[in-house]
Length: 146
Image 1 (cartoon, rainbow, N blue to C red):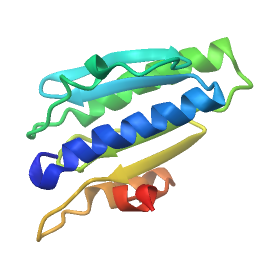
Image 2 (cartoon, helix red, strand yellow):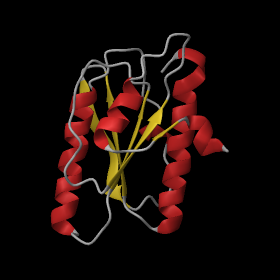
Image 3 (cartoon, rainbow, N blue to C red):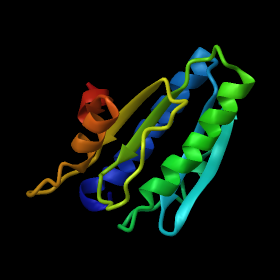
């Protein structure tokens, strides 16, 4: 995610997604995965305002614990499904796919969207394969900016 300012672009897209959730008065949560594990940075709650402290420590650089991030998100989605069963639950995964971790699609995610930040001359195509296996659309950051 560090190459070509992809991490900065991901942070900008996160801010836009949270602004959208706020305008819709929709609950959102931010689970970050990197380094040794995954942690909850915000929510689940309706974002009333944005705090740079949620994104500032988000880093990149390999060794992505993708499965840990998906497990954490799956727990939040399951809890949400028990609390508000009629609520629609979306999972947005922003990644460059540079992981060897395998994960299964969370049961309580009504919709999943992969935002593929992979760049480079030799693409690995992991996001595309994951999105296909999960029956989810795969978008690029440019798709969301246009």
